[in-house]
Structure formats: structure tokens, C-alpha cells
Length: 117
Image (tube, rainbow, N blue to C red; front, top):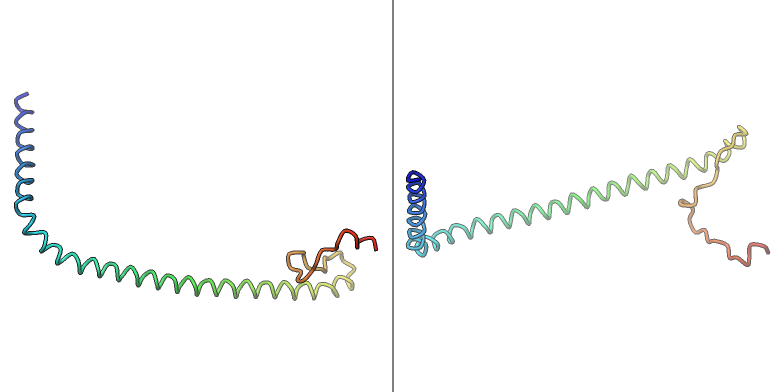
């Protein structure tokens, strides 16, 4: 057990010495560290803000590209439905020639009382 006690004494003494040294040197060293750390912190914050702004711009550009592609796809779908109507009657095939409900514009549902009239 003597070996274990000596090992703990050395660790406790070393920790105590470090603590006392930090308490004595702390007030002298902290202002110097603060003088160096503040510009580094400001530079890091500026870099973060620039990166954030660049990310916002990139996201906005990507959003515009996606909106353009979606609009082109919808336009192609609309052309496909318009071209399918004559082809369906000529070939005699059973092809859906109307747009699905999700693509119809300005279609109002009929009122319950007007359906039978």
C-alpha cells in the first residue's frame, strides 16, 4: 500500500503546485491572453458571418433553379395533355386527355343544389 500512497502524494502535490502557480500568475497572464484572444474571436465571428451570408445566397440561387425546373416540368406536362387529346381519338386508345385535378386552374366545385338543375 505504500507504493499507492506515494503515487497519490505526488499527484496531489503536483496539482496543488499547478493551482498555486495559476492563482499567482493568472492576474498577470489573463490580460495578455485577452488581448490576443479578442482579435482572434472577432476574426472567427467575421468568418462565420461571411460563410452564413454566402450560404444564404447559394440557397436562394438553388431555390430559383429548382423553381425553374418545376415550372418547365409542369409546362411540359400541360403540353403532353394537350397533345394527347387528338392522339387518343385518332388511335381509338383509352388515354386520359384531361389534366388531373391537381393541375386544373380556376375550377370551382359545383354547389349541391346546382348539380341536378
